Image (cartoon, rainbow, N blue to C red):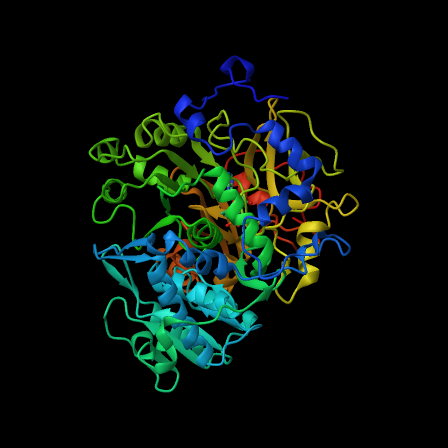
Length: 638
Ligand code: PRX
């Protein structure tokens, strides 16, 4: 079936690609390419994998003998850093800008691929000298500075896995992730700049290390220059370590040859229990998946300047700031601070200054900037932009239109990419030539079979809501949950066990044109400003406060954040409700989990709706708060 290319062929509002976009696109046709990728999935992925350099080719593209623990490119030997850096050094790209970094105060640092290699090699030598080796997990807790990227790549280079903990998380979240990873080495900084203030990361690290007996050494990057506590024998300044002969060694360091299935990183994400899940991604499949999706969806070319305005500490940053773009030899933009600091012109000024050609961000950021008005982007020459992207939550059509009309000046198609920490890369996404519908992530990426089904696994009718499932394996899929394979099976693969499908945890609709519309999470996971949080994490932070006996957290729609956190608390006897206590509890959650988890409000209650087995029925709280019908309450205890 050829692609539909007239607006009249579609149901509802549609935006067709311009002739310029079609002319420049790497992939000019979707349907036929998609059909072929499904008919011969392994052939398709083998073709993509062949674009990378392997130390040793694979024997088998896909091993599905132990579902759902799929293996890809079995027998192949590779290292993602060899593909992201080493191989570029043999070509003209050695002199190309690998990345441009701008700090919030306005300082700028740039690195060619040659310079990136030196930085990463030095860092890798330092880690090696500390005894870090294949099989270890290094925890990285950093602001958005170049050293964060160097640290990630340095781990991968020597075969250690990294576990990056988002720099906005607080003590408990950091300590818990260090403990699960059993890291001996922690990489951090003396702080980062955010809205003109220093974010005191080292203070949080000191407290977290007190709760983490496994940490032996802590590498500290000097970023802000403000004074921090350095424990002798444990804490080392990176700039001091860099002067050691072991780090220098002419800036060289051998890249470790890894099995395709060896772990590259662990990334913790929120689930339905309080304990975060450490999803494991690998060197082989993840390299292939991130680079292929990035190349096709964002049509990446050597002239591009690619800006994924996410934090490297989340999956978006791992896949599309660091790995995918570097494998594709792109020039990457990285910015440290807030989008509207000191003024709401900050991003548009950077687009003009650096000639950014592709901007990839979240609906929350778009809504946040939209609220300041059209004049901010209009004041700058943003004509370099040719493509835009969105990720993290459904984009409301109003924000889509603003992004399209004001930022992209009706010239730049918007790639609304649906995916997850678990999927490693884009799963449902347009290509530049795909006709777009505002608010729809459009169609499955090559090789992926996707469906919207009911509880029994029957496909629901077009336009009806159902559960989003992925029916076929893909190379970028997480391989397991660190130290908890059973949870991996239970969480993602048990609901449609018979069919062997992956359950995403999202609800969605598929329209008459086959376009997917993501509705949102169906589990106890909240997307707040695009960040993923579990209601259980917020609740366990609340009950860790001496005054709280029980707590429940729910998400309610919020104009800017998508969802906002509202909490309900039963106090222990001897404590009484007050505005001061409410404020204290909100701050307590912020301290324990992180500022992004700070609840909008705390409602003091005498009881919470529970099932007879004692589970809190958040659905009932939410319906009540929204003034909706509370639905079936037959399982409600009281
Ligand atoms: O609910 C979906 C939402 O984000 C969830 C995954 O969150 P996380 O693992 O933090 O990864 C975010 C970045 C990939 C999904 O289950 N989500 C992500 N992208 C979209 C989205 N919802 C709607 N549209 C999207 N484009």
